[in-house]
Amino acid sequence: MIETIKETLNSNENITNEVKENFLELITIFNDQFKDIDLNTLNERLKTLIVKRESMFLVKLPCKYNPFTNELLINLGLFEECDAKHWLMHCLLGMITAKENYYGFNNEENTLVALNEGYTEILTNNLVGDVENNFFTEEIIMTNLIGKAIGEDTLYNAYFNNDAKSVIRAMIEAEGK
Image (cartoon, rainbow, N blue to C red; front, side, top):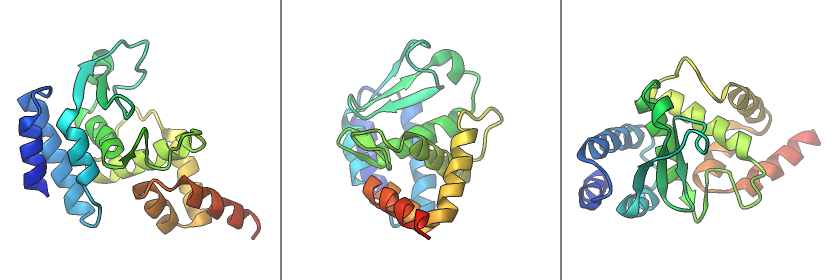
């Protein structure tokens, strides 16, 4: 699948060669750790992905993936000061788990945004390392506590299958215990 993704990246004229190389490196890191995760959605999204600079007033993080428009939005001021590898991996996880207009456990109602960001950041930290100025410290703590209550397997399966309902069900069941 990595070769297919490489071909897809090379065919996307919206992405610079440097960004393509960085993406491929990060996708390889992800694939080495999570061989069981299907990368077809990522491959489809990479065909039309646009990377663009965005206003610091609209993007409060170094970069952010927008599944609605399939754009990677860069806050250049923050991006130049951050660990780019870390933030690109964070955004790639959004593309890998994207389903329609949401990703991870996030859904149409945005009921699990904090949990989604916390889990995405935990995965990012495990894949490419932690960063000094983490924007998601509270979300990581909350996600770890919820993971203890409902089980890490539940979080893992729900995140990579876009299944917010199973997390909510598991939290309700855990409350009753």
